[in-house]
Image (cartoon, rainbow, N blue to C red; front, side, top):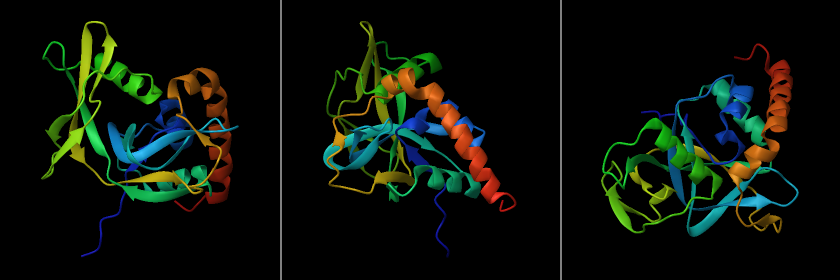
Length: 213
């Protein structure tokens, strides 16, 4: 039996922004908040986008984009360029619940928690929860809650392990990788110009691939 093609991509940087996805793919794919363990998201000196590399015990929060077409996967491959290598990882998708009031989380509250996670500025207030990951094993998710206001804590439960591509920085010993990359700061400072760059990139790429899809 032929292996099932991987059509999911775990994103953790500029591709978290819906505006960037629309500029490149002309749509926002179905997605889920997710985490990949044993990696770290770095800032790159003199660059505005991040890189990830393996780091035991660390984790990267982001999103899994589901069911991308061949054309969309090709666009992302071209966009990430030769500085990244495409690896297969096993993100754990996440679902939010209200840890304070014991009730389902509204889309607004869930969105607030997601934005805080993506920005890297969330305050984690609980550790060590072990929950079922939707497969056969129990997985410990540390720092599993975020405080979005003094009286509202949102918990993050592991839901399902999926298979996805992730773009990993090629140069493991790169001295230009530092600290942590801040999504929220990137949005405030660079998003508008970055979207214009992505639109120009997609237009040029379309010229070279016209008729292939």
